[in-house]
Length: 403
Image (tube, rainbow, N blue to C red):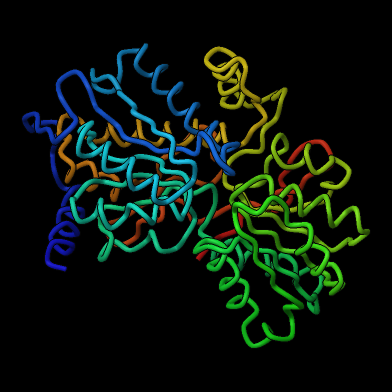
């Protein structure tokens, strides 16, 4: 606790420091010419479609390095496959910290893999930066002062509350069916649904059914949920496969509730195409990133992203939102490292991460910027409701504020 409070004090003081006038100060993995960055990604296993995120991060860093790096230092990314398996994530994290000597761990994919290494990294005072999870547990600067997430959208509890409120605005007496991943993230989303429904939860939730990430199909769960004839179908999964299967099966059996999918599944390439574009028409999802547009007319940032993908990853599906997210989280890290200037100790890297003020990123939607304080580690709190129109994701609401 004393160590956590000491770091909190350092975080609060960071914005008062004058690093421009300070001498160079480095921690492990940093030199005059290099910043060594550790990462794990599911390059294999059930979540492997999400690995495009890691490939785009690496390509973004290559682009930065070709332009001289960050404050003259090249970004050296060491990215290992963890197959979305927490024990493998732990093994990889130890190698990255103890053998490869990275400055910090960055953008680990998923709640369970990130949770597996959080205690180890916090005990060793290694920053766990911009991990990819919307779990509310990551906003805990007292107990986990070295861990910070940068999610696709507001945390799972806020996402659930926004989904429920949006559905009830259309149908105040709606009955809800919930399909959720059987892990910390899925359980948090379900808890958020219950909290949002309040005293009505027992009556309003027709049924909730779970599945495992490694399950080959969720068809049986969807058939059981469809039999409830619920008005709203809430689908939470980290894997595109489960989201696609749920949307397709509900359509096949003629169940036509209002449908919401997890923010990470708002992906035409990996979810809507496999589900069937007709099956996906009308599906809703909360998001903070701009919906991908193949031929943007008045959006130079989206045009720049498409040009980047064609140049750096010509064989990748540019329509995969996991790539768009990788571009965004890499951009966020570059902003943070520039903010650190020549003070690249682990303590200052974490302190600067906790003092982000209205940071705009090129692919965030209007009105959304990164903001953190030493007491609040949530960079993104707000989002928009998106709807799939049968061909593209389109914005379907005003800016929705998370709590």
